[in-house]
Image (cartoon, rainbow, N blue to C red; front, side, top):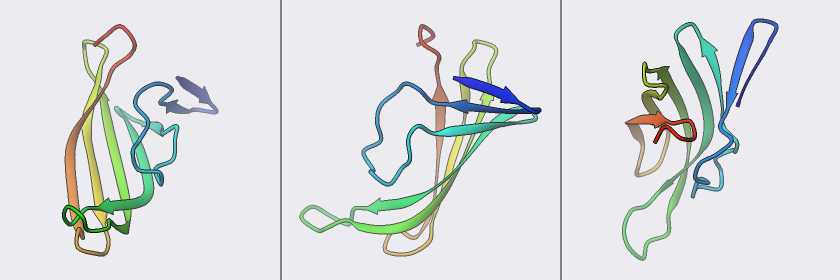
Length: 103
């Protein structure tokens, strides 16, 4: 769902799988910035260090970028910086969003 007011547009993810990480806020929101949608997220990274070992939770910040494609989909990347713990570092992965009926 997208809403625009006073020259600012915000897209809200209204469908899709629920996150397994309970510290991620839902629904997620992205703001239109020139040629793409941009989302910023702060949460706790759930770092798994092995079977039978409790997860280590660490502060993390993410930025997601979605660029509209000619076929109506949105594609981009999701970058996360994990600030502490055994999983400290960065993760980058491709992302995509599809409107109902475009899958």
